[in-house]
Image: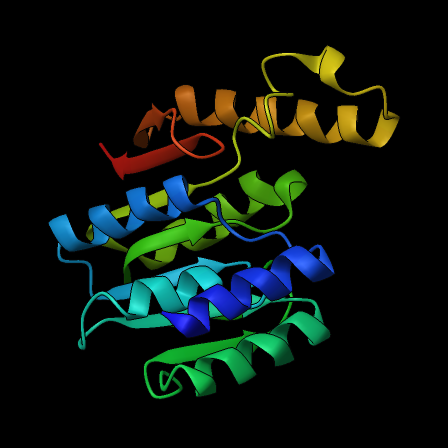
Length: 192
């Protein structure tokens, strides 16, 4: 637990975005309830959520992909300090081009928001038959529902891409998605 507190303190100090507790608790409860054993995370940051997921049970394995080398190295260090290096596989790569084998009970998308549709399309092939794809930050600090919260052009463009992704999930012929108002809004997508 001390390990997680120090990771949170580091994230706060260094302005590294990590999951809000409410959203992370929601996913942890989902993992326990549905007995997810094999988890893929797109967007490691410094490993906070990976550690929370792996800590839920001794037979949970997490594969996590991070593009930023400094964050990847910090995550690897955090996994080692948490004694989880044997159950968390940290990959330094661009998740859009990273070749990945195997199937996952839960795929968690929490990386470059503008690429969510591409991540979803790429990794749905790695989803186990009863698995789910969970996406975070679909409210983007309230801006998705109220664009007036930002006057920054690039943020507005990003928010529009998140709105487009939410619509993509709503009308997806292959998946049924439920949106949850927890954390920064979470979507849970299951194959129809």
